Length: 148
Image (cartoon, rainbow, N blue to C red; front, side):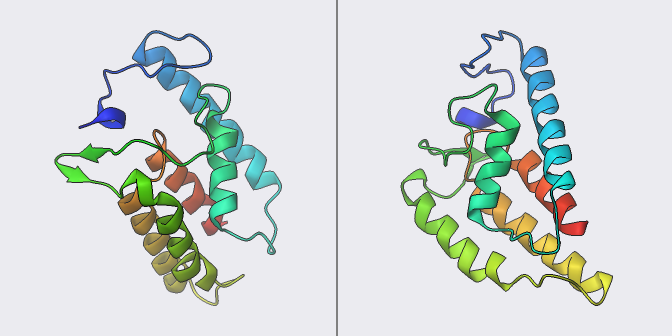
């Protein structure tokens, strides 16, 4: 794995944490707080778009990383699979918003339609991997919020 995927690597952080365990706890705390905050403010008018995703990421990790809420500026891969090029992330995320997120309804008549859309958003988001760190957790929180 390259830059973000090496879990032994401790990314430079605003809190000066040095161990993977400390980083993990700080990240967990941030995502938990962000999910609670966004759940409390969720309405049937909430629009899941790229601005919302950037906000979710920033709320989760701004206490720890200067890059929180910003698309990554480095290319990353996992298991030899390269994620979307950092150079094209703004355009890639705009297409994700227009083609996937904008098509989401405000409510669902049945669970199967909801599950299909949550899976589609989750999979496409992870395929893009727009952030330096926290992509999987951002996708999971987003899926939880969509399900609510």
